[in-house]
Length: 237
Image 1: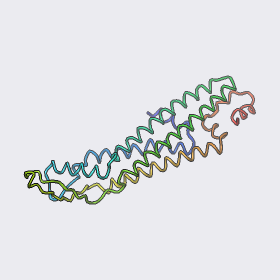
Image 2 (image 1 turned 180 degrees about the horizontal axis):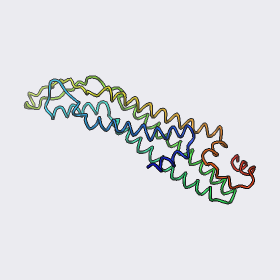
Image 3 (image 1 turned 90 degrees about the vertical axis):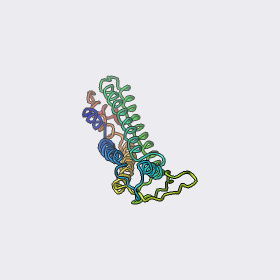
């Protein structure tokens, strides 16, 4: 894992490096917090008047389906962490393979072609990251309640009576950790927004300073050239 992290940071600029570190650190922390909340949710979900365990479970399920009709925040965070991580691993391994081939290549024309391939892979990676994050962020904002309520009204039938005599029972329920969960939802939005911004800035940086960009990403792969001017020509075109 440490070798993969070091290898990933080797192929980054300032903006792409920030994006990579956000993925490695922020999502792991958010998923860990959400998993802890998820495991203890039912213990911190209370209703007044106190219902049976079956009725409380039904109220809890109604509470979750109302606030998270598509996926829970843990599902969204886990999906983003996993899918984005897969793209990062694919890019890191592909980039390392291409860089090794470029350094070993003796033919100038093939070396230029392979360097362009590396840049294409780099751009495609961040375009896919942008699309992934934009789609998940849109779904999250569209279907997930960003702020958890202090109280939740639950209507359940009194199943202890026969059907003709059943009455709806109105209970007031609350999640003791609703404030922390609301803050985590905002944190998810902020992490996604910063990551999307880093993707955009990375591509803009590439378009604005392509020569310096290639030198920074690929290092001294052209150092084998006897004529330094030839090396500059290879990078610039």
